[in-house]
Amino acid sequence: MSDFVSLTIMIILLIISIAMINIGIILSKSLKAQKDLEKALYRLIELKKEKQRPCRADKNSFHM
Image (cartoon, rainbow, N blue to C red; front, side, top):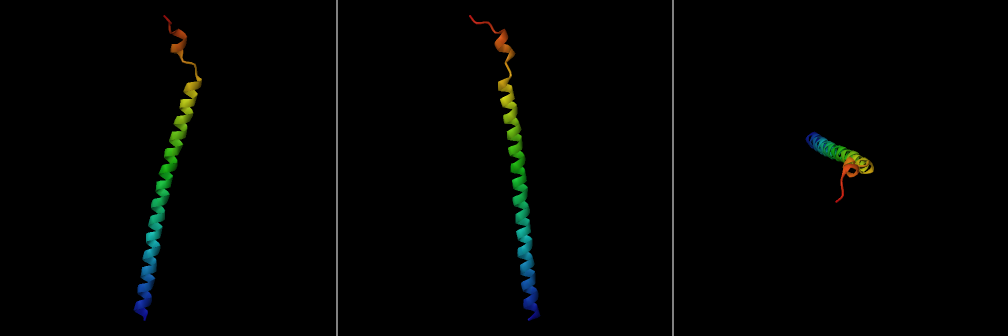
């Protein structure tokens, strides 16, 4: 009977450890996705600022 109990406890601990590893993997992927979204947002803000600035080439260009 004690072998069955210890085996059951070991299986439960194994399942818990696998679940913790999976949670860690999911969290690391979501953190990477969050960083990628943050980079994309900053890039979008930079592009918007560049579009709002007047281009110097437009002022100095000659139309024929």
